[in-house]
Amino acid sequence: MAKFHSRKISQSEKDGMIFKFCKAVASLKTEQEAAEFLRDLLSAQEIEMLAVRLKIAELLDKGNNYGEIRKRLNVSPGTIARVNEWLSISGQGYRTALVRTKEEEKKENYGDLGFLVGGWDHGVKRRYPMYYWPELLLKEIMKSANQREKKKMQKVLETIEASKIKFPLYSQLKKIIRK
Image (cartoon, rainbow, N blue to C red):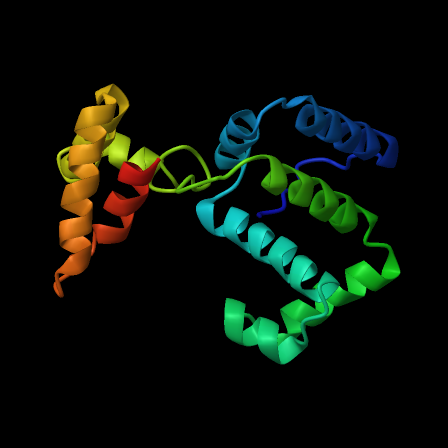
């Protein structure tokens, strides 16, 4: 994030801005609201970096070593060491987030939800619907389908699954139909 130095900001003013930012984050009531706020605030790459740090904290908390984490997440040992250092110095924020997200995972199944409903490419799909029309159409069909129609679609999926040829959208199709 770029720094700007148009004028000196007093420490109390900085503290006030940080407090207000924390209040804004805490005021968000749903994952959707939080996702929209973060998407407006940060780039996709920045949010992914933060998510990876949280995953590193989770893996460290579970007892994974640096080598396992590095292989799994394709991150540098320096990144893992920084997260480990934050965890050892205080880490209360990480631990609180980890405990609460574990509780939420027990309550619900996230399915194919990405960062937002529709995933990271939500904005792209909205801007270029013709490219994603098969997926968008299938989602709409599944929303409006009755049980009999859903069973038919399930049979189609099973036929595709039995065949040796699986096209790239197969896994997405599988998630959409199995919802």
